[in-house]
Image (tube, rainbow, N blue to C red; front, side, top):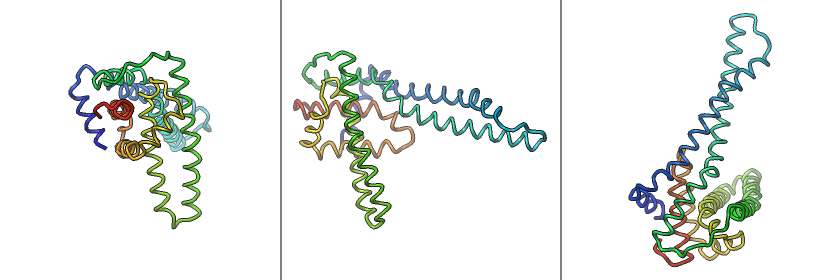
Length: 237
């Protein structure tokens, strides 16, 4: 649970890493701005042209309101799409943070896997996590609807699942670069369950704050790298 403040402090003390740490926020800002511009300049005119022709002042006002409302909806959708795409598009910069932190803590040098092997390893890991998390989320939601009295239990289990899922996503950066597959990650999760759950819980709570899911992503990558190196190689966490 101390990983977040430690990683944040380490980042503050390393100005040479600040540019790479800013990349996710810059990518997110660029994407959300681009999607917002498309919503206003493209989606709004496209939508208003398909509305009935207004003949009076009230009708024209209604068309304008509907057009801006549609643009607002598209902007919100673009915001969440940018939020989802930013971590993936920022992966090269986050990998530079992983490299720097591993050198700092003295982790053993790793063999370069190549782009396609790293991509395949990461996709298999995320797909495996989705196969577990999606049915579990649906089951917990259904249990909460059918048995309202079980809400405290389902809430606790859902929070634990969210913490583990966040930890799984952050550990993906250092573990993918080392070629850790899905089964190896499950073993790590099983053998260090409390450690991984505490790590994921802190970041899951932080990510609920507005835009912190992007702003704290570099801190999460640094913390995950230090923690995974401590677990695997006995370095200082």
